[in-house]
Length: 208
Image (tube, rainbow, N blue to C red; front, side):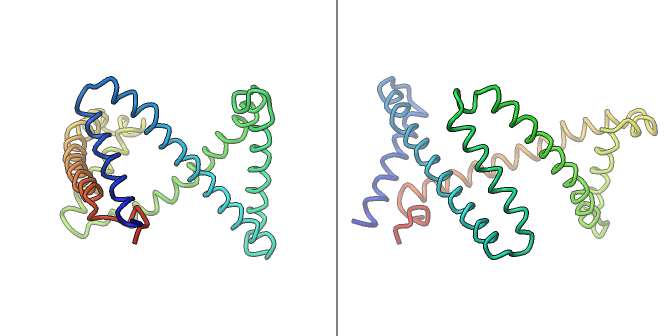
């Protein structure tokens, strides 16, 4: 029963969601919206809660043991407690004007700083990856070089048609490659879904 029941529930729920996707049935659609969607929301909430508790446990332990860079853990815990208090006890919660102003004065600047720092790491990783050791690597290097020049003003100043060439590579070659990848990923997703439905793959159930 410990193995059979999770597999049976997975099969029933999966087949119900598939039927609702491919066939129009108001009663079935209402059932999926009313119950299955709420089940997904509750599961996601539990996952976020457990992840938050685990994150706090790890960083509080690091603070107590004074491990390397424990000051950053203090910053994380204090920030979390402040935003949790404001989000729970303010009138309107996250829609409160004070909460939004406080959040918008911190989060966008931190995100901008993080991405600006990541830019240098991406550049260094690209330098190591884009080495002309083969014909494929050379083509990738030239394509990346053209696209980068086509998206900055200096590229058009050096060679006026550079933006058009960059757009052509993105719209023609890149789009075709992404569509081929999407088809392959979709086929892999269908195969994995069928394995889950019939009980061949049981790792996600923790039933073994």
